[in-house]
Length: 285
Image (cartoon, rainbow, N blue to C red; front, side, top):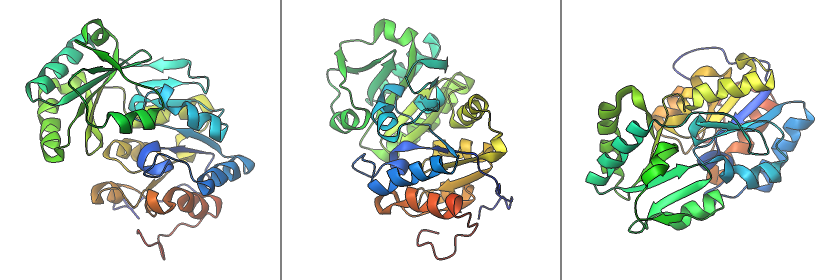
């Protein structure tokens, strides 16, 4: 149980899941067991949605595979879209904040990606993690010399680095420099996401609950990242993955196994479908 010592919701009407590090394994694939528990949720009348740092377009394969009919959120909540990927609500960075962020990251020699409209823009000298991101989101990058007008409509800017400690340091520097102009969080140790102040998973899970007509108190959430804690705080029941950091695990009501060991499916079976409210006997607890 979390140190908040709250009583998790007894009735669950919807589950909202993080994607990378949670719903999918390290190869960015859905296991047969994960697909099965989502189908069992539907059979039980429990709605299913996703919130991801990916662009909505990067959720298309999962939407189709899982037959998702509920709204989903991309860019950490920067865009809420229907299952047809048509935006229902969106929050894009101000041009000033976008340009300030790119300037700071460029000065620190961090690779920069810009997601604007349907495009993933990358400068020619940026190479790290491109293959991983292409595999993850399911569409290729577009090379540009400069980001130019795309910074007038950027939904997400990503600082990319193989130096995790430096990226953590830059996270603090950007927080200080941009203040309330942006939400800044690492979705992975190597990705530093910069989005609109209203693009956070807590606000997004509330928006999805409203669209579903479900009280937040009846929404369960599951995730592994620091950016998932905001939705833990707004939900009726929260589950952290075993591969999450100690801080993230401490913020959740329950902890499951890792995404490498069917932690998502195990959590849904135990805490939602079977209604067990204990971490006892879970290896990751």
